Amino acid sequence: MPLLVFASITARPGAETNLKNALRELVQDVRTEAACQLYELYESTEHPERFIMHERWDDEAGLLAHSQMPHMKTFGATAKDWLAGPAELTKVTI
Image 1 (spheres, rainbow, N blue to C red):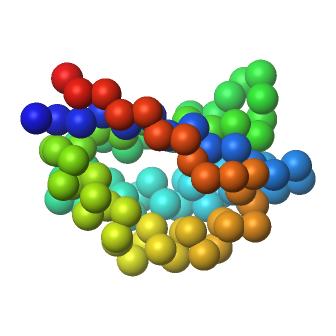
Image 2: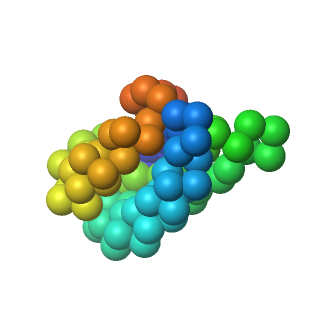
């Protein structure tokens, strides 16, 4: 069963541009993952430090595999100083 995920991501003050650029680059890699059906990045118009990733995965196993991908680990190491905290995930089944 497909799984929708909304990931709310917040940048530290002053790190908005760096985080946005890194997230944009990440989108291209994630879209090549076998279980990825949709991976879209949105930026809040009211709060430039807030981003939302809209994701659709084949299933929970696909999402788990996503978190272990080399590009996700690289992103985590690169962006750790730009993040205000961990992403907040909301999972929704269809």
